[in-house]
Length: 358
Image 1 (cartoon, rainbow, N blue to C red):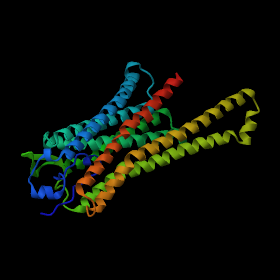
Image 2: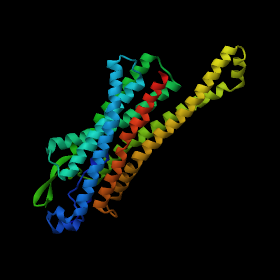
Image 3: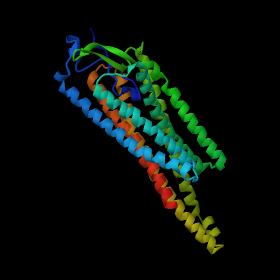
Image 4: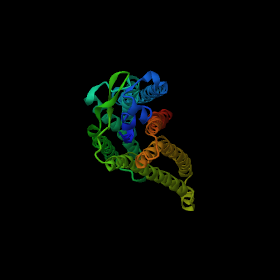
């Protein structure tokens, strides 16, 4: 029978997605009983992937949970003021903790068991939660950029700004749920047309989910657009506006009009001098933080989405199925590191800044 192309899927569904292929296609066609002892490279590769996933899980929990605990204790235990950025970072740390659990821990265990042992309901639930956590994390990062942009360029009253942030968070989680819903239909537990070590192989996969090739391509492109292209565009615009506004405010303080205004009073001159220094420092910090946020987001996820688009449009014509699947899964592991870097960029920076203010 002809060998069909591996069923690639977008984002989290690619981790551990097996389209009933182990090794070369000829191996499956000519031998219906695969022996793992005869394929040590496959066993070693999966063990290494499991170790990396366990590490991602451990670091994700280690970095995100303490931030959640600190922010919750700040609000409920110490009764301190809880700003909009606190609320945003709290939700981001929760979303990234879910990424660590469902994209890290769940897949690591799956790698070690080799086949899916948890049943069809768990298959759909895990794949749904994987995409939900990734969507939520990305949408909250985008919401943070919008919130910071609003504070700098179009400040609202405290009540209105807080309501706006809560609306963004509710909308982000709701949109994440909606965008993740197709996972419930696409993924199912299927029996492989071959055995492994003399036993039937059952996998949580997308095998047979698409009736036409264009459906897979459309889903992949839709996912790429919603989870990467649009958020990246919003982040770029928001942080560009932030940097521009701070630069413009700093430039105004150096104009002749501002200088003449300061000469009227020595106390006013000192106050404006302090303000000028503060604005310069804020502009400098905003530039570097903006650059760090944008470059980290691109570095973590651009390689994965580019690879996904390439493999989907290549249609397996010149790409070895197993090699391609392994390559994209390895790139996805790198993309998962975004949930580890987020606490350092947002949480640690914000908490450190607050400690300096007290």
